[in-house]
Length: 97
Image (tube, rainbow, N blue to C red; front, top):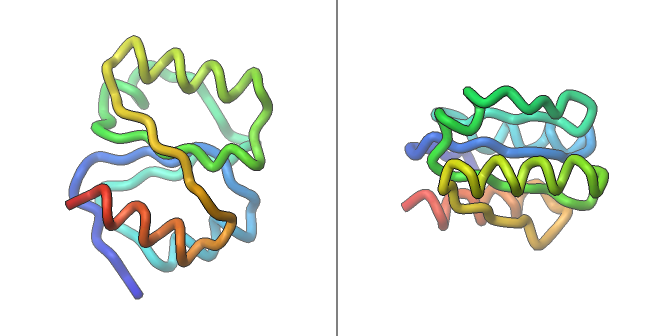
């Protein structure tokens, strides 16, 4: 399965193995920011239409910074319901339509 993301999307969080797997399943207008590299550059939020959070691998502090940045920029936030990269890729595809 390979899906080309159309809406500008930012994905925060995820373990390295999960990130490696999901990057092989989705491409296009999507940016991945792993838990070790979570930055809070305002441009990340300005350029996003959708934000996804893999909350099982980020700290509470990072989580709330992401949520606050999304709120300030009126960006919808979605949460992955699973740790499976394949199921998460399907969630992205479903919301991207």
